[in-house]
Every structure is written in structure tokens, then in C-alpha cells.
Length: 143
Image 1 (cartoon, rainbow, N blue to C red):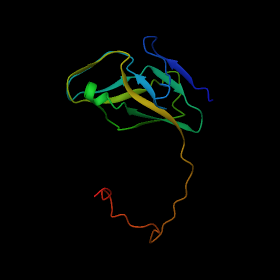
Image 2 (image 1 turned 180 degrees about the vertical axis):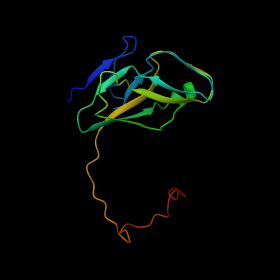
Image 3 (image 1 turned 90 degrees about the vertical axis):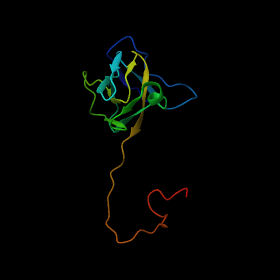
């Protein structure tokens, strides 16, 4: 089991942990109460800085209930934090856009992350034709 060092910026949010038997994603919490007006953008502090192991990155996405509960969208669709973002002041944040007026209470679970091994180095080779069967182009599956 890999040890991950976590700095908390507040004692008022739940510590990171797995929800046993439910998911291998880990919930992140709003580190402060945030009030947003419809159309407003904010970087919501998540209250943690994490020292990821070299060769790994974290993928941050909204929880499935985030839009329904708060009407916020993560503006970069998925956040990627690489292992070099590990300084004492490198607090993780969720870039959020409000679609309606909302207050997100401190410690609310608004997004989640998982740690992934970096993609291996690849070599790209230009070819005239690919060997796989043609599936009909983008968006054709399921018709």
C-alpha cells in the first residue's frame, strides 16, 4: 500500500478516505462555505495539498450528484494534478461555474479524485491506412 502525504488547510473538513465497498474514487470537500450567483466562476478551495508519488497523477471530476445538488459545473471537465504540484501552498481547488444561485456549505462533498499511473511514453508512426474494421465514424455506435 502506497503512503500519500496530505496537508489539510483546515480542521473543519473530513479527512480523505475510501468509501469501502462503494468506489475507488475519493471524495473532496469544500474547504469553506461558498456563495455563488448564476453565471459566476469561482475556484473553490478543497482544503488539501497532496504529495503524489513520482510517476502518478490525480484526476479530479465532479461527483454524480454535484450538478443536481448545487447547479455547478467543473469548468475544465476534468482536472489533472501531476506529481510536481506538491508544495506546501499548493491547495487543490475546483474551478466551478454556477448555473443558478447557490450556497455550498463548508465540508460539502463536491468532487472526487483517483490517482493514476502516468501514461507510458509512446511513439507515433504515420500510416496511410489502419488495419481495424471501420465502425462508421464518430457517434455511429448504438444506431
